[in-house]
Length: 279
Image 1 (cartoon, rainbow, N blue to C red):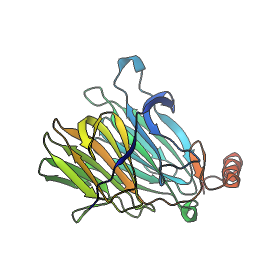
Image 2: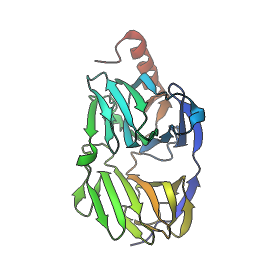
Image 3: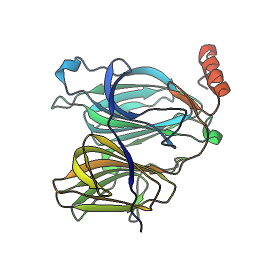
């Protein structure tokens, strides 16, 4: 198999979202659609006392996308227009398919150590499913397979690893989404089909990715010039591995909405105004 090379490395920018939430953003929705089928990746932490009181994301709409929340520390209290409500705890995942429209609220809470730490990924929906029925998958930490082998620990949220399948299924993009931790001196390789967008978000430690040393915190973007990714580390490293086949469709992003045409965005805004956004 041929190892992929690195296209470039993104240093996340600090942004404010919701009701004053401070985030590290690697990329957000853009008409260029460079990371198709992925639209956004945020790393959130509320661990600096200067940030003040913990804020969150009061009720807001989404259409045309899927949002994925993965908590490492702390919790997020949530509720949405489908009637779902509950708490995303440490190690849990919430995979929400907004489809034709959903309203939801996410309010974080600190852990016993005073920290909140996690990620949010946005995944696009293809044109044929933009107006599909909204749905929601809540995955508890205990139901996420954990594989340990040769100094590598993997938590598999979506996709396959050596015959083991992640609990999140029936996603249009059929993505790979896994949390990978390498002990000092460990190596990791994984086959990824040619043509699939491949990203790695390095959030702890330092590793050598396809021969290039990468330190946390960084988003690694790979070229489409091979069919395998390779990682090794001397001191230890942890990263999110994200991969999926692009839809290769034009997109028009507008805040929490991502559609295929400007006319569809205008219709979305009319639906909000007219009270027909939620059915």
